[in-house]
Length: 394
Image (cartoon, rainbow, N blue to C red; front, side):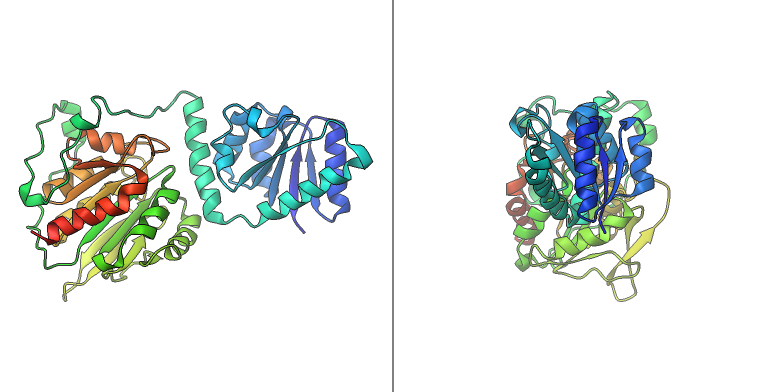
């Protein structure tokens, strides 16, 4: 029996919907006031949250609920979806849908209830990774609406922010950057990277946060297996979702993708995803095989797993062609990792602002002066390939 939490301050509509769904053998929990919505969602754990649009403070309330307890949600309101100003991003995921309620509930609302039932059944089958996407987007937008976070734009346009993509041996040294004493104190010790040897398998490290899952799918789908690369993925995502997310990535392209396990070998033509709440480190065994070394050390940049941790270890410990990629997301995680990969002679790529859901992580990496190319999401596989092939062809 599916449990539906119905939140609406209109007694008539709440009665029609709640009683109608109960008669269809749903476990219905009616709620007149949204004042304790977040707490109630956590306690009730509904399969679907049904929300009367007029009940809530619009978009903000829905996003707060999603950010804390990601739940498939159906929003019901009197106007067409096209008139819901500012809601476009919410309805882009499969986890939230909208139905326009009729002005009059003729025949007891039977037709409207049938539409609601069909939508609830569809929402009940939403993939858990889609909920993770909805949660990261909702969390970011909720924070932004409270005025506590803003995206960081590139300051001088792309032409002033990156060097053209070319093999490491042909690149000019990174530009000199003005750094405050506080930034120097916070920056980890510089890593001494190995000489890049094209005879070793290529390694690609990709870091992402809010909006990253969809972009990562596109990258894995388009990445040629002929590169025979080792791919390490750090996506900021709760622990309960990373396994399912890895399974989803495994089905979109030619690379075999799995959630990283401690001690697991990272072989060419495979990709590993950092488990939620765990840093993805690496070790080399006595035979030179690269293996996963999971770490539960302190959060870095306020997050775990941290993109910086993985990129810095790869830059310090692995040989062979190397490419570091930072995708959409909020914060500065990945900036120090990009510096380490650049110092080790690898090629560095950032997703562009136009296709980033949140242009924080890429912007901070660009500001280091160590990014070689800024690329739209749909061009990432081709540019990553060009980066790797450029080093192999040295």
